[in-house]
Image (cartoon, rainbow, N blue to C red):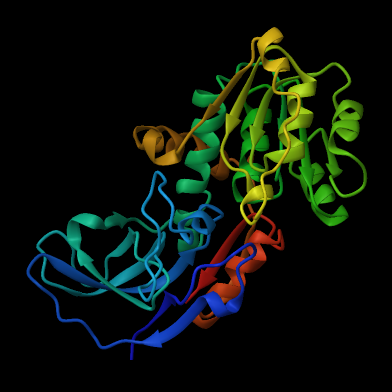
Length: 331
């Protein structure tokens, strides 16, 4: 019997297991033009926390009593479409369930890559790397010789951002993470400097790591990290505002950044972005990142959690920072 994870209630502050409900559902018959996909892997991502709130945003909120959704990779097991056949590997947006029924037009056929798990299409060859690639190169207008600071650097996006910056000729790449083990991981993948933000104030550690300042900040955290970056950015510095995980579960307004007025004199650019707005960059990203992977010049990590029933805990663990690289649920 197919299963899915429904949103049982809306969280106030940090989500808990009680906000999720694992339910069995009947097998849905196919209409003309639809396919049935047996999901192999699904993604849990920080942006999903915002969708648990019933507030206006760039993407509709999850609905109470209805399944959550998100990126997934699976195999077509039944088809009533001429465009997709049984056995095709596809990428689609109906995760958080064992089995998905959807219009074939909403699925993208994939070609498995030798030596890579199919989960890579949710990570290093998917939206994760597109976010890093477009955010750094297009939104932050990175150029060779820039000094770059990345927060949440051991996460899915951050770990890729730093490597792209190095491969593109950054003069310095600094990352923050939440444990000594993650700091060592960052140094191992090419970060010039890395620090544990729990050890001392972020601004203090960033100034020590980048005494001459930074040109680009890739923000996955917000709050004290954004404040520290504003303090260290040089004139005409650029910020790609990708996420603010530090405040996603806050129930009170967050005071930082308290130094935003510095953006005036420094003539800073702070620009938020959504990866889907840069979908046209996907072919270029796959071509360049795929080449780096084949050449062994770029590495990536995944944290795998097995079982749909454990997807809520994987999501909560991701919010707590328990993953290195991309958090993936194997179904």
